[in-house]
Image (cartoon, rainbow over all chains, first blue to last red; front, top):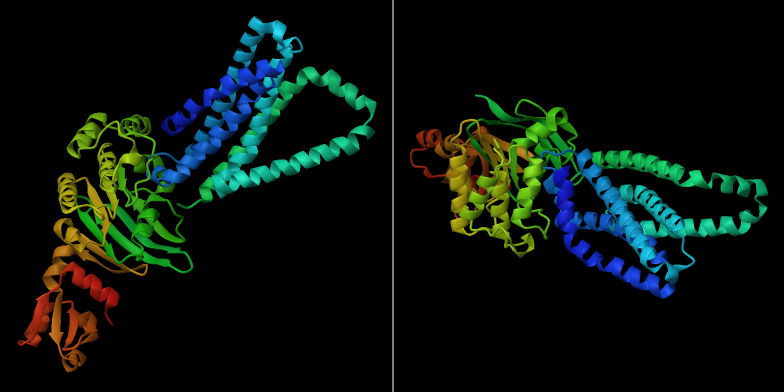
Length: 218
Length: 285
C-alpha cells in the first residue's frame, strides 16, 4: 500500500505544484475581503480534487490492470485511495489553520471581525464536510469511473443543497425553541461528534468500496 | 514433471464470447506458447490466471496454490508483460523503481538499473515520452527485477522491430535456464513461438484445440497436397482440417509419415505453426 500511495504522490506532483498558488490566492482574497473564508476552503479544493485526479490518472493509464499483476490485493488498492484522501484533507486543513493563525498574529487589525478559535473551528468543519463528501464520492468513482462520478456527485450535491434549503426555509420556522437551545448547549461537542460520525461514515464507505472493487473485472 | 501452473476446466462466458473448458499445465523449466488469431481468447486466458477476471467455472493453480489462498506470495513470483503498458504516464523509471521496491519484497534495484542500461532506457524520462517498444522493454525490465519464477507475456513481441524481438527471445531463453522457472507467452507471431517454445497451445474462438510439445507437433504434422478423391479415402481422425484451392486440396494431417507410407506418391510438406494456425482458423473440418 505504501507503494500505491507513493505512486499517487508522484502522479499528483505536478498538480500539487499548481496547487501552491491556491494558498497565495486565498491570502490575497482574504486581505481584500477582510475575511479568512477563502483559506477555510483549501481542504475542500485540495481534498476533493486531488482524490478525483488520482483516480483520473489511474484510469487514463489503465494502472489498475497493472496493479492486478503486482503482489497487492484489491483491498489495498481501495485503502490507499482513502488514505490519500485523508492525508490531502488533513494536510490542507493544517495548512489553512497555520496560514490563518499567522495572518491573524501579524494582521489582527485588518481582520477585526475574525476570531482565531472560530476560524479554527470552521476549518475543522470544512474538513469534516470533505470527509463526508469523500465517503459518498469514492465508492461512486470506483463503480462508475471518475468521469461519470463527477457528474453524479454534482447532481447529488445540487439535490442535497435544494433539499437543505427547502428544509431550512419551510421547517426551520416550526422547530421548537428548545431545539435551538439544545444545539447551542451542544455546540462544544458538535465538532468532535461530527468528526467521529464522519469517520464512521468513511469506514462504511470504505467497506462498500472494497466490495465494489472485489466484483470488478479488468 | 512438476507443474508451475495448471488450469482445470476454466470457463468464462461473456455472452458473445466464451472461453470454454481450458485445461492446460505448464511444467517447470519450460516455455509454453499460446497461439491464436486476434480474439481467440489469449488475453482472457492470461487475465484468468492473474485473477483479473472472475472465472465462471474451473480452477487455476499457480505454485500449487490458488490466488484466493495466497495472492500476495504468488504474485510476488510472477512477472507480467502485457501488449499495452499501463504505467502512469508522468512517472519516470527512477520513480517506478522506488514505487516497486515498496511493493515487491524481493525487488532488485541493481538488476532493474542493469536491464534499463541494457535496453538503453533513460532513468529520468517520463513514460509518456517512451515509444511503444521502449514501454515494452520497461515492462520486461520490471518483470525480471523481482526474482520472478513465472513470466506471463501477452503479445510482448508484437510491434517490436526484429532486433528487439531477438533480444527479448534471448532473455527468455536465458531466464529458462533455471529449471525452477517457466514462461507462458502468447503471440500470433508464430516464428517467435517456434524459436523458443517447448510446448504450444492453440486457441480458437475461446476453445483450446491443441496443447502439446512443439517439436512433436512439427515432427509429425504435415500438409498433404492431394485430390478430393484422395481426401475422401482418408480417415477423418487422421487430419485436422483441409483447404480447397484451385488445383488441389491441402490437408493438414496429424502424422505425415503414416500418410506417406499409405500414399508413397503423396506430395507432403512439413507444417509450420503458422500453417497449423491458418488451417485451424480457415480450414474446413
